[in-house]
Length: 313
Image (cartoon, rainbow, N blue to C red; front, side):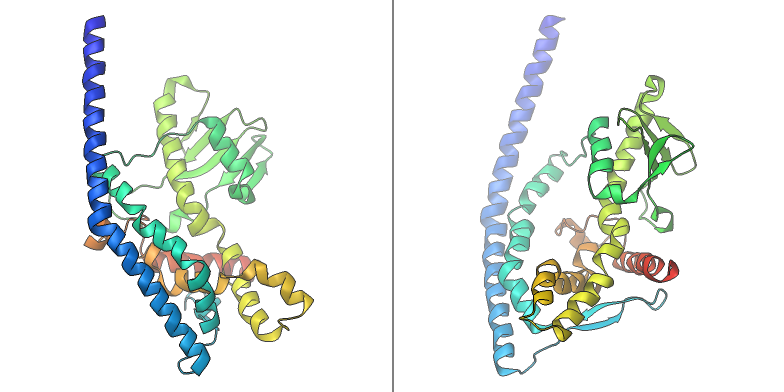
């Protein structure tokens, strides 16, 4: 038995070593042949676009002003419909290179992981999950459940999504005890799985994986829409138009809404990060990871913001 286990360990070690070497070779080849050239091209395009925007600002030919417009005809809320030339220049100068680095130099590593079947979501501990729910942005969606004497995270909005075939976001509620030592997960259909139930540990772990995946969309796609859109965009666009740029109020507000105009325009009007059409390009643009379309994302944002800003009064 000892010899057999040792032999299996050696074989597994050698297989992992071979995979690591193969992955390293593929990574270097992708960097050298594809992504470093793409980074250079992207860098030059950013500089070219920056020069064009500065010329527009200087000549006033093609110069644009920020505008607000309807996000959706169904849920009638307004957000940025056009970004100003000044905002484009600020964003290109101070933010675009950060995205370029992520889209090029980071992508080959993810491609290698996909090729080697290492693109897996590790299961976090109950302690980590309790911390994420109670001590990060998700705490804004947590309420005290008097009947259960536990904190409840309501994963609201997933029931309205139509996911691609083969994708499942089934977590609906997560209950956390005050000391963070017990977790109860409720899934679509009403079933509950308890962290302290050893008989159904495998089912609980599967439910926890659903929670992890749901949280990855809940934050950017559902829970913080009213924080990110509509009101901040209105303050940003109207503040730049109406406030004295040298005044105290503008100086206090401007660091908080800097880049808001351009980021919200990109998210709602361009939508490359959420435009997953299940087409071939999703295999090359790995930031298109959500199994929903741009239209679903847009309607979800509009619906959530309308509910928060209008329906609640």
